[in-house]
Amino acid sequence: MSQDLIAVVLGIVEGFTEFLPVSSTGHMIIVGHILGFEGNLATIFEIVIQLGAILSVLVLYKEKFLHFLTKEGWQANKGLSGIHITAGIVPTMLFAYLVHSFIKEHLFSPFTVAIGLILGAILMWGAERYIKGHEEYLVQDVDKISIKQATLIGFFQFLSLWPGFSRSGSTISGGLFVGVSRKAAADFSFILAVPIMFVACFYELLKNIKLLNIGDLQMLAIGFVVAFIVAYYSIVWFMSFLNKYTLTSFAVYRIVLAVVTIWYFYL
Image (cartoon, rainbow, N blue to C red):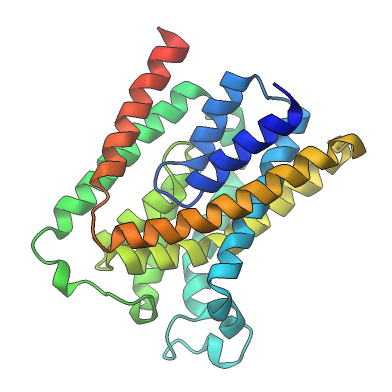
């Protein structure tokens, strides 16, 4: 398979899975293994296409991010603010910094991804059962989320450091457990992702920039554009989905994918 075709395939995988509760990292590890796309170029490529996915959130939520650049955007009583975002990201960023090397060394394999997929599915099922029967009492608007809820959702984000668990799956489930609706939790999850992913991507990019080859720029550009476009429409579709359905179907998909992954790689 040519590099350009690999870029398209992985750009689609990244764009479609980055903000769905199915684990983009898990899918990238699995598909990367299947395609045999590993090594230095794969490391740089995955960073670049994640930046493409981040850009889609900036475009879709541009009014929120512009609001954060104003003085009012840092007043906690004026809706979702920079304080809420800070409360949601600081615990995870500090913890991620401490365990980053361990995770890279020990948890990036199809088997550990399969375990993460199963545990994440159990978390989502548990969250859905927890809110069953009293969904009308949940916070329905992201601008109504409290600082305490934002902080607690940030702690649930710890789970996403395990590849396969899913950042959006962890944060949306966490939102349900602390009294936030699926849609409001998803909005918060996507906005929360931008600073965390931006810092993580640039940290990795600076560490690996020496591996970049000028001849690989075309592949990187294709992957970036494809990831941006697919992520944009993936988010739009997912938000529409959450207006009608629960997370249960994603939990089932995760279990099936975990079983297939273990069968494909280990049986």
